[in-house]
Length: 476
Image (cartoon, rainbow, N blue to C red; front, side):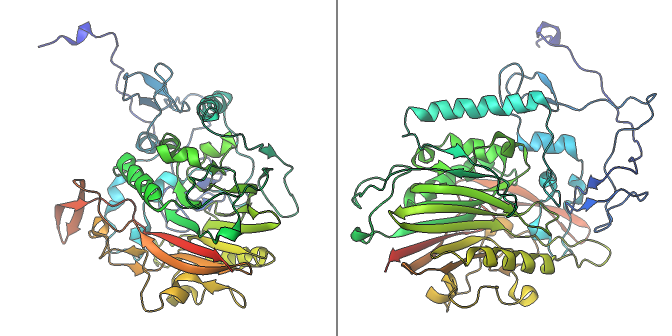
């Protein structure tokens, strides 16, 4: 038996939280449905009626202990606002932060909910604001994020050719959060040559362009192994452009240390982006003239349209846009918070902005339900890639029956993810679904309540709860 007194640390006393009423003059984000509730005397969410979170009391006589998180590597107890351990530098896990932010794990039993398969939404209640106001972050958090980003950038400098990326002015008229431009010369390459980031290619070789869209699922279920599996799919299919949804800072960090990462330039360069709960991200092997993001005016979940303008060859550009449209989030008492109107309006807003371009691919997790939302907005000149190439197949990218990882959830089979195109210099040559196979020798335990009995199910793990879509387009 080893005496605990020999270890160089002291045990912290047990801290019991003090329940304090929420300040009625403050707005607050619901930890269940992510709705931003206005200041009110009510103590429950206006959408799903969930209880409001704890808030700091205005009474100075009441002291609420600041939460801390223990480092998994060295056990040092760090202040909540620190993203990395102050002793050894180990990054806090998303699950660690989620545990401190909310203690809602008991509400996993949502089998009667219409849309429970879209959960978890709880880890994503950061930055959910309707107008995307500037995010206020403490200086030490900024410095911590900036330090990690600088280190990562320095590591890649030795193996990447500089892209000459500069921050440009924000286009206030269009509502863009930021635009960055990259200037590179067109270089003709052979199909057999491995593509370097920031290069263009000549269409004289009739090279097929591959564009991948994938919702990577921010759930903390075997996250590292799932992201590695997605990396293996990238290495296998070698997409030229990648559009990810539900990327968290932790997932970003995993990708950044992956072998395939060095082949791409990334749309995420602003260190403040990494303080958000989750976001969309674009990567490209080809030269990118600009990246930009336009928040949707009606989103209560912080959703936006991300746009990459890619230089395919001199005087020929391809616009690739992605988004994660408003998610269904039903809750009591009516279970009807499906946000269909918001989703339809966001799709129309995106299409109206993109259709001015000559060559456009708009892809992502549209959360689209044909029965509820109707036909997807694109009209003349636009095509649905899956509908055109594989009209005989359902195209369900979210399928609780074929994706055994989700077999404990309520049955849902939908074509949530879409790729629509408006092309004048290209044509769609193929589209396929990827990520449908379970990761070998990997399972997880899922509790499911059947009547009054709670059963533990051993289920396989797939790369994500969604399947990815891989589009191929060829020069005409």
